[in-house]
Length: 362
Image (cartoon, rainbow, N blue to C red; front, side, top):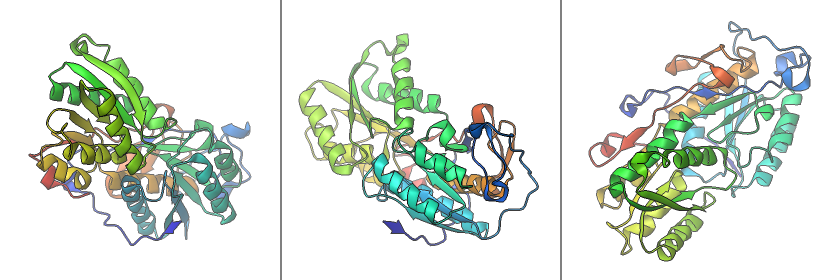
């Protein structure tokens, strides 16, 4: 499926309130189309040198490949990225499968290679399964940027991360602990079992739970809704029915948290089982107002995409290679310096509740 996008509002939302950065995790490989004869670290050749003063390539063609085409959160991210490319006088599109599977993404990557795109921006369903196709893209001079859920480091040049992974994971435990009084059984409702971002956050959640202040909380299980609304709804139902004394659910996925909230809101568990995680204000507003959910968190996905778009353009134009210390010029978001392992942090996320949710519209 291919979804064309109109120009997204490029203004940085002042209401977001979260200090934004982008995370760029550098791979060592790939070439840009203007320097296809230069090898990079992936191929063992001469290391490519960035030219921060190089002009943005004319008539850039950039494709955004989400986990699945109907994921509302990633649609917003891609809108932001498309707006960045249009701001730079290029053309961009969102393409993707109707299911959140790596094999489906691979077929799209192959098509984008044939279309001779300047850059591919991908949220990987499986970091390793998509790697061979992405490596082929880089070998043909296509810049590869991953966002939200990373690809294998040697299969992309830059990773645009939404926030510090450790902060996200640990903050989720803090939120659920506050809502259940620091005591009781909890479960995690994740996306797909191989999602890089989800698994990283969950590891930090588990580590946070080893701290003495959380000794009264027991993580019973991790369930997977596969970033599918109906399956996430069913997994929530199964969790609550199989664990009758469950006190809380953490769902660090926008699809999962909204599906879980929908089930709980019309069930006997409303007001008895706490739910938190990562969601968009527009998805979660009704559940905050009806008391199903007290608090949840997220960053501004439009700005995440905007940063990813600028990273793709800078890579394709030779302004950056993804090396530590390079500076990305990110349009209205200013400059961002690439840190250790290429990472620049986007977060921290904003916490949404009844007091502030109406201040946001995304």
